[in-house]
Image (tube, rainbow, N blue to C red; front, side, top):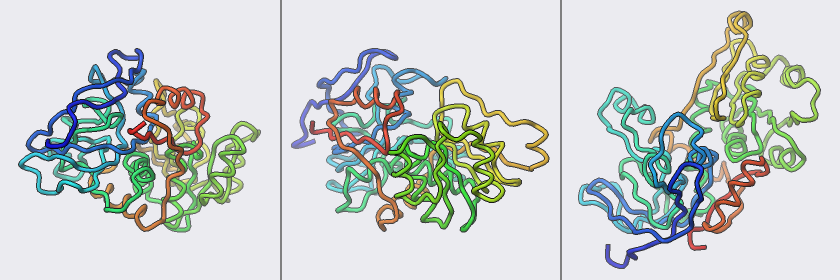
Length: 349
């Protein structure tokens, strides 16, 4: 720990929905199987807002430092760590650690591990200058990478890439993305295009319309101004999209997607609006033979693949950088639905 400060600045809250405090806290030392990452940038995900507000039926650690899209440099490591060296670039992801020995872990489904550690939820995350991560699950980042731009890939990118894989959509087929102008949606468009899919984006507003089309969406449908969204989606895709990636944080788009998805298509549930349900009328679900499935975050292989798309220039993060001290302002904009792309926090400010 030579040269590493004893204290650091972080955004921390002591009770659910309570004040978010920007203050100094101790820098922790890594355990035998852990690395200490000097976080340079951290993306802000809607999950971070949910964690603070207590929207989900899963208790958070309290007090809690949120965040799970941290990109930085390894400055210390435990004596059992062999996959990182001091000075390497590393990412702190949502999945901070897992048992590696249960039926889910040994089959590559580490996110479903019943003993999973979640950054910014059950363990302190990346809204601090120095964060701890289990080395086996930390994301290796190529040297020379723009750490601000890769930060959103560590959750949003991996998550939508995994969802697209889960959709089983084939090159040349249509995929609809709800919430297309947000942090996950803008990345989903690019991954889908890089995978050879045709993209229809659903969101609202001129800013998001221009952004989604500039990133590769062939069609943009504004849900606030389109009289019959279901009919319009079916029309422009000549029968409905083969897959729908729902990253919107509202319940209605989930139900609607079950109506316009093409027969034998797949509706993938990714976004997690509080207290929401996925509803699909039974008769048409059966007759259309559609699949409705949930998709969580990716595993270690998905992580490497998602980062590789970014490293090859096939995906970029539309970001706006602000200081770590401005996190509450970002949450305010997020609650109002006024964020296009992704906000990234510079931990030095």
